[in-house]
Length: 165
Length: 417
Image 1 (cartoon, chains in turn orange, cyan):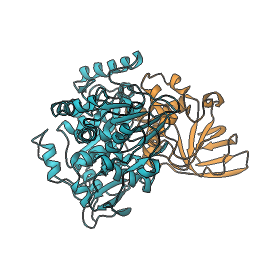
Image 2 (cartoon, rainbow over the protein chains, first blue to last red):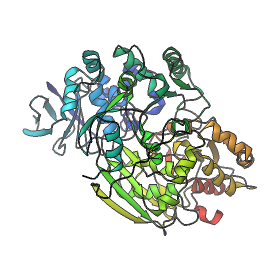
Image 3 (cartoon, helix red, strand yellow):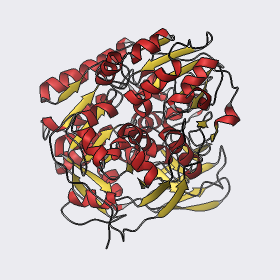
Image 4 (cartoon, rainbow over the protein chains, first blue to last red):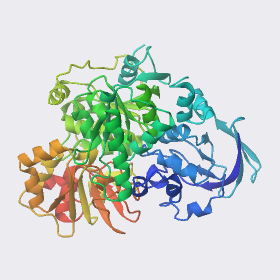
């Protein structure tokens, strides 16, 4: 899978309240509506700045805090194709893979806002076309590759009738 | 090879002995969802072509995060939960029963050695009962409702040994804030925490829940303790079931072992907007407070309400402070009423709201205004957490919160104990 888009940079410890605030997520299951508020408390205009396929690029512990699956879903429905971070909090990581949003662990130090990126999930590498460098990706655990390849955990269950690793 | 508590409990629920970093598909004793996560789980259940719940007696859905509903969108989601519960025969806890992390321990269905999966990050709370309990998202919960299982990576463990007795006016909340400040918000990511030592042994069960509850604020998957007489006495209020306690082996392998002396600990405060932004209360003292919140899954238990009533009895909270109290469950609310604790709090100026999570998660029950400061017994102070990103949230023990409500500024509670 080859993903292309521009980078939007965020810092360390971006928590799930910042990704999608509790004041919105309790109200609706309409993810297109929630997507409009993604990252709102960190950047009120963030949703407007996204071109389909863009990436969220962050530091360590991305998605810390609550178990809300609305966080990766809001990111996905905001047309972000993947989140790239130094590290992820475990709940966000599980939820992202379960809902089919690639969560990519890699060194994000050499990526700046606006950089044109190509993320090759099959090869496991990122090309920063603006800077002309290649960044390796930390491979996903085999279980998660299986879930992601099946199209998320719901599709995995439909296909296998239960956990099948 | 020796095993940690996490490795032992997960082995008991797997078809083989398991060790850190291995993968297991484990049999789960109890599943829980709340109103922020269950509606998506119900949707995922249907998407997975789920026909029935594997064992309805082992599933609890709890309406606590926006309870009673403040807006019609929430009402529709609550109705979805009620309808699903009726159709599948699972337990539904409706508005007013309390916070999920109080109700699950009170269910009498879990205890030492249990494996519990909840669609809420603070599910780690039940580690205080010597149960392995951890949070997942909605799709994972749906998979559990169908299969009765959960895939888990066996976590490595950090062992925290706490020596000494907490001084007067210093509580489990101060201790866990101190640990979080030192370990930081991602210092235990993917790991389990084991809390041990004489400080932990001396804590009440209620205080132990506070410690286990905040393990996730270090990124941890679980916050575990050994079971002792206090554990069994507490559980005997709710069940006659005998549980098998799980201890770590003497040769268990830990990722890290940390030792603390708690005898000289002082009250701690987590300053905005990070839980690991922790300082001694002195450093935050004098900060004006507009709202004080006592409650939540961290500190809404009877012991917490009693501490508040003791400090407040025959005193009034500062006229510029709104003091909001949310008991953690109906049972606690009733017990606090019978003891006169609620009477004392209300006479002092408290606004008591329905047992639930509202004030902590910014859905209703006290959303602060721009620029206001809140001191709360909750577990998160992220910007916007309470519904307004222009407010500032400080976290502290019930004693510090109530002393601050009295004076109108962040206050060391030890002068009031």
